[in-house]
Image (cartoon, rainbow, N blue to C red):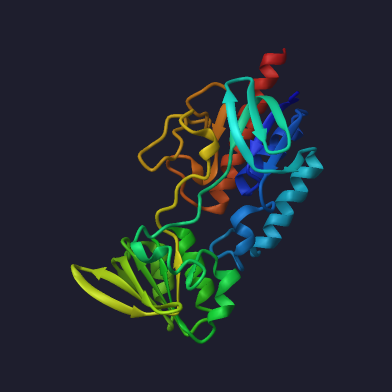
Length: 297
């Protein structure tokens, strides 16, 4: 038998916690389901460069969680296995199932993939997706970050405080975020794409296609932020998506089926800023509260 609530938020990152807070504050019963730790990826970030308030990822995570739970949101730790129906929705985890009039998808993106043959060979032996977790292992070494979004730049900025040199390999080297990194003495921004990895027991170099030429960058690690897809396999083909599998939404962040919303990096057009993810969550939370409140009157 399913537990019945007004809304379920899947994912407890900045967007999910913000949506849960607003929904709970309106007097609705909401559960926020997270498979790992509240805060999501921001727990892996140190100082948040460019965030309106001076803080770190873990500090912001703790603040968002406290505000959501104080508003009355309930947090559940589980991995969502399946999503069925449509207003009401059935959300299945490995331990329990829930029925809700509204569901908010806030799961963010999966870890990146280079999409090259050597990737599996070097998994755990020089390939990483978390600068704060693994960066200290490469103090005094040269490393490479592959990716062009703000997350990639944030990670490269963090690595620059630990490693001897960091190179950001990106296909958008002229972006404002990349320029922040290029201003550092121990950092380089290189236009290109990673096409191979070299090494024995671990990564020793990253092969880059740079303007049609092949360049080998000496590196003990490569931090991957390309090839990221929405972390929502449980939703299968329920919603309209773009070619990158991000969910299409309207102005109120409604997905293509009644009672469903998508917020943060999982949605089409997400700017991949923490402040934007929080704003997404608040906007969707307000839409849920407005819709369900109207249905009850």
